[in-house]
Length: 165
Image (tube, rainbow, N blue to C red; front, side, top):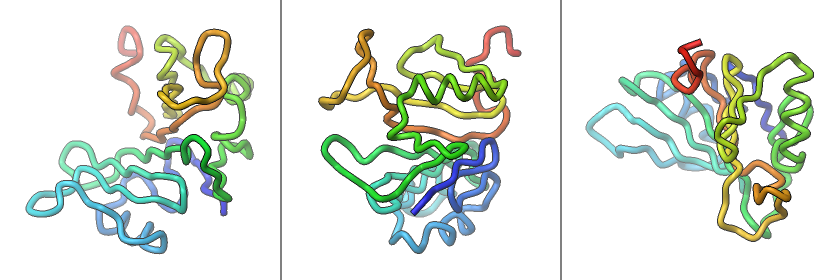
């Protein structure tokens, strides 16, 4: 199974701007998701998994619409037949530096100011390169592969861009 990343529009069946009910329906084939908070207010997060890939659906602000989707690698020693694809590359099995190089070849700017949390403004993709698990590491001590990827709206990372640009 493939989950296609479509920044800045969505990931897999989840599209940014969906209502909570639409997001829940989109991931219903994967099993019963966990909604936080569980009741009483609009949800802020929906937790689910596509087989071994954990998926966090964020409904920031008013909770009325999906603002971001974050996908997490299965973890040390775990395998999955689910591929999370960005322009044909499996983000959890392609070395991070190769992903970043290909992004730059597309004309995207990869901000590596925070080495463990690089991001691509405007597109908007955020990466996590942090884990306490025993994984292959670069000479700088970073995991060779990313451990999560977040797809947000076009302006999702504006707060991290210097001078508000």
